[in-house]
Length: 86
Image 1 (cartoon, rainbow, N blue to C red):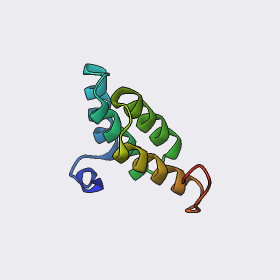
Image 2 (image 1 turned 45 degrees about the vertical axis):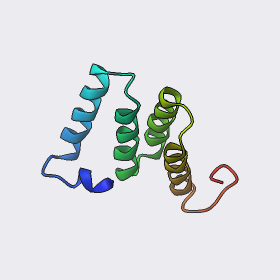
Image 3 (image 1 turned 180 degrees about the vertical axis):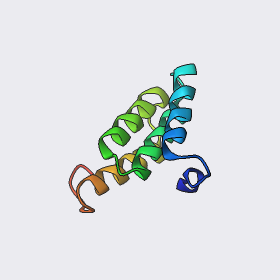
Image 4 (image 1 turned 60 degrees about the vertical axis):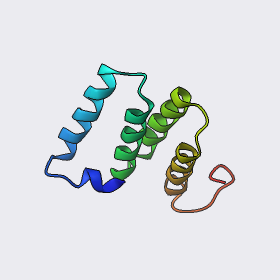
């Protein structure tokens, strides 16, 4: 999934495009999840968690989103399994 960010656009342009889509439709959980993925790609774990949590709030329980959250927590903990990651 992260391959979508390896385009010709600069990271700033990619972020702006995602933010514009969310401004247009803030209830779209898929766009929030993509924003979380983007921030994970940028190693911005705090913003990634915020975006994934917003996606979960909008979408409801979802295994893929919980897995993404666990991934962010794992990287945020310097690639260590923590109780929160599990």
